[in-house]
Length: 91
Image (cartoon, rainbow, N blue to C red; front, top):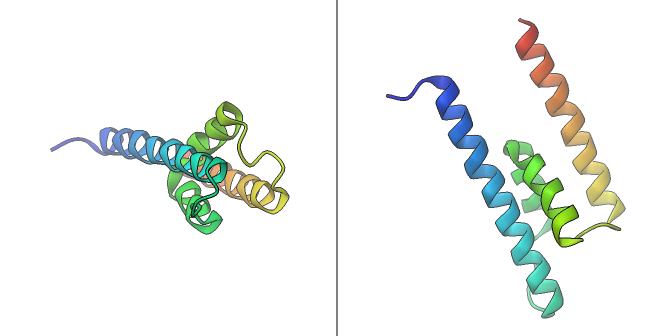
């Protein structure tokens, strides 16, 4: 059985890969004027640990660069994750 740290790394890799894939899918759908990935789903992926993947996709695909409510929520999620990680590491 993998150790907890290994499971965390596997989860982080998987959720961030999913974040990039969903953002790429949404960018493609936007260009083709097809059904988009709901922002709520993208924010949930960020909450589950995909924030770095979302930010990488924003910059890599130039996608959702002007969506202020989305970006504001994303920065709030990032701040909460940084605080939670700091508290967890400080224990």
